[in-house]
Image 1 (tube, rainbow, N blue to C red):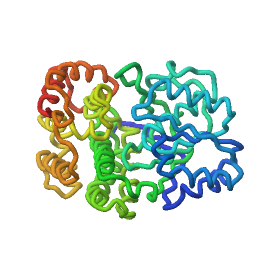
Image 2: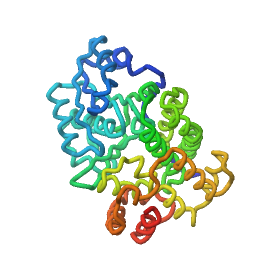
Image 3: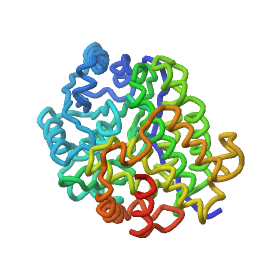
Length: 378
């Protein structure tokens, strides 16, 4: 075993109903005199944000809401949110929602604190100063963004750039399973498979795989695999929802330290060009990337097959994942998403730009390899 470093968020609270007590929690732990809540209009419209704002008001904490976060957030959105935080002199940032809202909140906490510009943050360890106190509250069980030091930004029309820095680790992550009850089957399936991808890629990550990330990834995969069908079948199954939420968090801790690879690298162009949700993009290419990797690196997938009780081969593990995808009814082919076959070479070209991710893959991926994977997925 070689030397390694493992980092994570300072604190995680797992408690049903905790979002409705957020004001008391923040007053006790941080005593902020003002907060910015970063979320999206969908959550506001369905009333999920209202109890949070009520709890902040009851605790005497002034709050302003930024609810313009879109899927695959743009640079303009992040800058707009940071300007709002500065103008209201927010002393804390709360990210409330899916991965996009939490990713925006992380960057706003940095931008509203100092003078560094967003463009200077891209890459690894580029944050030069500190940030505002940061609390993240996920409303889906998938991205694990509440426990990662990563934020993904859409730059230009289709390209995505990442900010990776330990400064992005939150001070507190709050996991409230009640927030995820009632999520539609399609969202539950896509985000759940996204979390499973995080665990799988962390376990097979080439450069920073370590015993701690391995243990978290295996436990995450067990919890997610045992509960995704129940969560999809019964949107109000609080026990399954809680297991999924914790499983996604553990997978997030794993891939925050043992980074994801080619599944994400090939999924990003799908989201950039066709606005396919991130979890679904991962699901579309997952079995084909794993089959490609298993040709030269089958041992790790065989290990994971044993972990989830599905035999002891890479083939049985991939078959199990295919069964889950079929059972939850998620789209399986690129053609199902109306992606023209003629676009596959362009997608392969774009995937090669994701060098930050591809370098972590257990098997080197060339442009021709990427094209063949897309062809298999089509």
